[in-house]
Length: 174
Image (cartoon, rainbow, N blue to C red; front, side):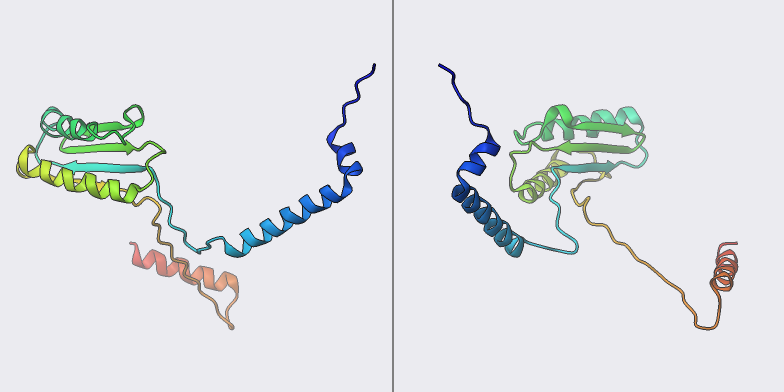
């Protein structure tokens, strides 16, 4: 006895009414989604990454590492939301930069960054050296400002405008 399997094309042709209903439903759901989806010229992007930085004027790299970086890292790693394997730190003379990565399951990231900043403020007053600037949590990587400036003229050619602008730029920057 020969077993006959039906493929998707044959099924679509054989059961035409079901295929038309499915296509119609997909079109309706797609149109509904298109009309109701949120839109924005500059959408808010909530990144699971933030930069924690601190500046300690006059401290060398070893002082910065022992007095600031180690204590801040210890505090950061006390949170279960922080993905330790992807969190990196860099210490220089008088500077500390820690890139903090959160797990993707953290939903309210803004609340977490605020909680982290509050805790770092408390840590600064209790355990970190006097004269330290920060630590500061910067999670606003998506906020970018752009400005476009144009120059046009009804009486001048493009080459004349370009030549004028180059002359003005050189005067301002020499």
